[in-house]
Length: 172
Figure 1 (cartoon, rainbow, N blue to C red):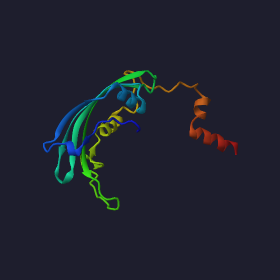
Figure 2: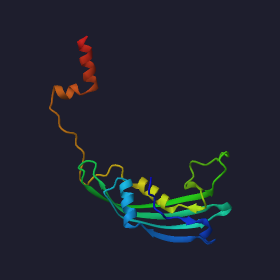
Figure 3: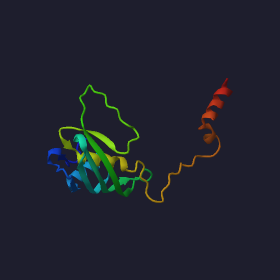
Figure 4: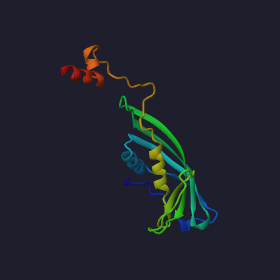
């Protein structure tokens, strides 16, 4: 990922009561996101979120992203419009020294990220959640993949792995 959204907050700027924000990606940022995620278009990318300080230098980022994207149909190659609403929740913790091993609970509900350089990278989190929320196989409504009809008879049977093995066996 080369051009994550430039949305971030320094922890020194976050009040004790936390902060709430709403961000809207610029046309240039949406174009970069669309290019990186192999989208035809990203017409809208908005995020509403809160950053709350927790105990021991930790911070909680909670919010929701909303996006309107256009992908390519995997069957017809036609444009497919999509509307994405994706919640996110990430806890940032001060990074441990490199040699220290940190244990974590894999079943924990929220993601945990190291707090690096005293900054909460909201844009990166929004980008990653958008990327994971995209339909990996977008399909235009009502379109189904149908395998091309092959000629009946010997060609169909010869394409089967068992038919090929049978042919090898009969040659001996």
